[in-house]
Length: 152
Figure 1: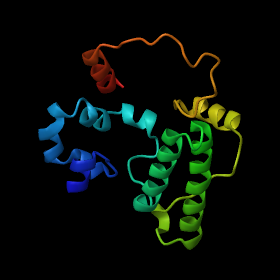
Figure 2: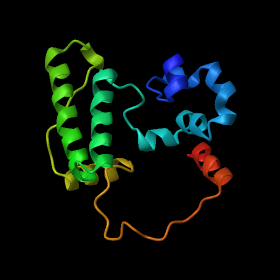
Figure 3: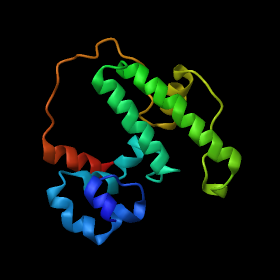
Figure 4: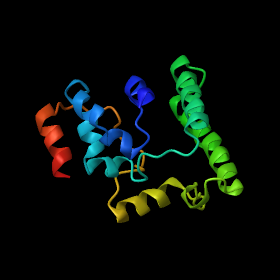
C-alpha cells in the first residue's frame, strides 16, 4: 500500500479499492474515480495486475529516459520497450512459474490486425497512426469528464 500511495502506481484491484484511497481521492485529481470506474477497462482491458512488475518497470523507465534525452525517438523507444517486454513475458510464460495467472503471449500480428480486433471487441486501443497528430486541442470540463467515467 505504501508504494502505491507514494508512487501512485496502482497494480492491484484491492489497492485501488482500499479505504485509504477513498480518503485520498479528493486530492488525487480523479485518479481513484477513474481506476474504480468501468472506463478503466476501456483503457486497460487486462486489468491492473502486472506480471513481474519490478522487472517491467525498469524497462519502462529506461524507455522514458531514452525518449526524453533524445537518445531515441519516441517511436524507437516504444518499439524497443515492446521487444524487451515481450522477452521478459515470454520467459515468464515458458517457465510457467505464475501458473494459470501468468502471461500468455498472443501470436504476432501487425498493427492493423490488432486494431481491427480491438474495434470488433469495442476496445479503444491500439489505434492506427492518424494523419493529423497536431490537431487543435479541446478542453473538457473536469466534472463532465469524471461523470463520463461513472456513466461508462
